[in-house]
Image 1: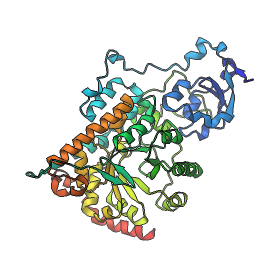
Image 2: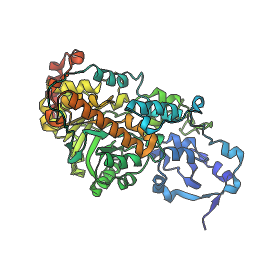
Image 3: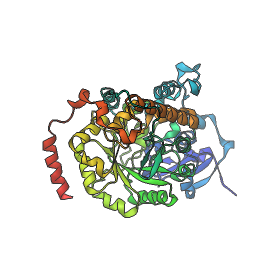
Length: 488
């Protein structure tokens, strides 16, 4: 017979060396687990001796906690619940107080990707909005990503027969109806209760591909179960390399994961003030967990920082050998932010790169992604012939994507737009993909092309508005890079 555990007994286990929590009416001893929790120990310490169900369910699949079933003490004795014990884990209302009467418009009223963002602004909880819309420090790179794309002008060629248009492409063995993929976005349950599952289903229906995040709300197995054919898998390398190896082998066994995207632009988590300003849910004080009985932190770490404690900051170029030893899948380096690193990636043997600054979530004032795409095109065009070059960051319109393809990109990743569209579930993702597909086709025709991936060329765009932002000291940098490449 399963043991019933009273709230009084649970409350007595709220010490650094003795921590019990409740999740979905099960009582767990997480004393040893807390320091190795992928989302960091602080969130567990915060709920020590209390019910963490609502916090857990807001960001995780119910199945994830089964991995620690061996730590179950028993079932919560609901007969012992008291107002005093229960009020500690009360979570503030998620809806914005000033928008109680706001009604989400019907999908047919959503005409572009920005419309999804405006709806999310009015309907996401404050914490969900801060997590999904925010970026590092002053959000300069986040905003510049989009601004610089707008500073590139199209150069339409007229009097062409554009009565039919093709936008299909292949990417790392996958067929795409348009050169677009869903960029990895963690904690998708902040956008929708089903988390990443609608993304997996909708990507297949829409002829695009979903790149699954290591920091997903649902387990890799659950997401791949909902993935009919193909996906990419984005990796944050764990300090415990055996855990990363286990995930890679799990992904490869299914046959559905077609490439690994290794994230390199966040060796440490950036400061995301919008996320940190939202106070930790609940009104309790975190227990003291250090040897000197000092609190672990003077401020709320934010959802992003809390979920990143496991990332291995020792990741370096030589680790490609290790990655090759554990997988035969194509390996793509995500987070390239200068041409020199694109050249090194080509030299050491990556199958592709993603030009990315994490949507402005990594180093603030890092260069906008479209500028790095231009930099590689201008200074080391040979990269495009050796590997796939992908790009993400600030893309919202079909014409934005056409510009990137004209500069040599193989595909463009969209992250926030799909996170906001997920507000509507699977139908929202499908509608977003349909909108961007129509815009890509129209932009392709309006500039005078009939087959985007075949015809795209810099002759269809004017980059004079951003050319002056290319690094003036590139010659010195490239000599230093050649020296580094020779040492690898």
